[in-house]
Image (cartoon, rainbow, N blue to C red; front, side, top):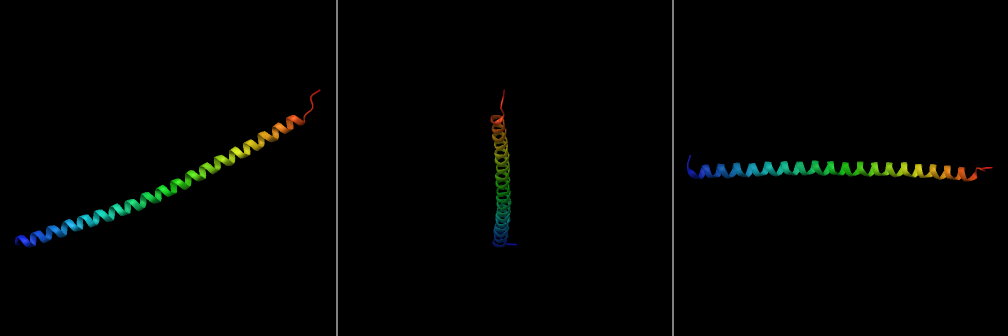
Length: 74
């Protein structure tokens, strides 16, 4: 093999390497973005559940306070 053929093979190998590397980075980026999206949804759902529990607790406490006010102590 002459030098030109070796050089061509080396250039092709380098181009294939960077192509595969780029595809892998693209796949990793897609996977990480999907994971991030799911985590944001999960965090929003957890926050919503916490807010609902707080709302229910506050309503219960308000109801109990009203019941205490209505009681007559002699």
